[in-house]
Image 1: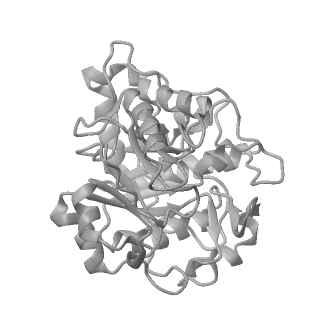
Image 2 (image 1 turned 135 degrees about the vertical axis):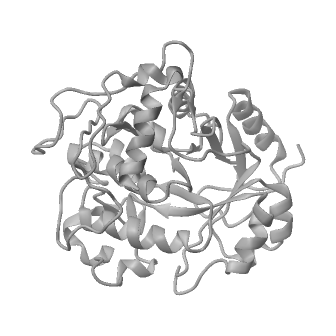
Length: 372
């Protein structure tokens, strides 16, 4: 898959509509970079090899880092950057819900109302699955809807089975001490993880994501990658340049292994991800969508809105010509707060984003149905 993916990018870079991408891009040969299609040797650590660049932060102590920032420019002629993913056939409406099916209550109504449905499909959360295979099939509605599964890449929760156990040669999060970057402030049961650690990459790509894909979900909703935007020192998930590059490389491994699944990144919409390069490929083109919480409610976050608008200006289109999905998720306290919800919804749509309004931040255990 690694070689075929790079052949795809090579063709994309040479296509007339994306000729500007060739500036600064590096196409590397098969065998020279970490493929993501096989497991690294147990105990291995360090960043993936291959031409990579984290904007504004050279990889300290990394022999594979580039001395200068290499960021392919957006096309100057108004054409689009070409993405690697399948893209979303519809932009919405969408919903995010992390509770069990019993709390979702009317799965058929959810399937009728929403075209993009983000749930937690982990087969072992606190010892059991939130949704059965049959219930996920109801949400997919015969392929009419796209069902994504939550996939926490930047941190690891102690409630996940893979915190304590995983089949050999994988290393569970709790036993991978070298990858642990400290407790997630405000979430005592969650630990920041170093995405450049190869044991951690193997666990997430070849075990955790693989068992989610086996549940026939349509893609992954990637959380806590904002660790790559963290400073290299501090008390809440410090991330060095090696760590930042590792986050980009980890997502590239997901794309290489799951070329036909949708990849959506939540919140980590800053400069590192928007401008970063991994394996000679612009990181942003690996994604089918991005989402950000709390852009318009409970209060307006002008910086988050500006980041989403900057992504929109990249004009990324999937390999099938579909535009990058850009979504907002805002919180208005309760599903009865129609006025605040309508205000956030309107502001999001005005910028061309796909809005979802939920009751409150954190739990996402209730599905809201709005009358507008």
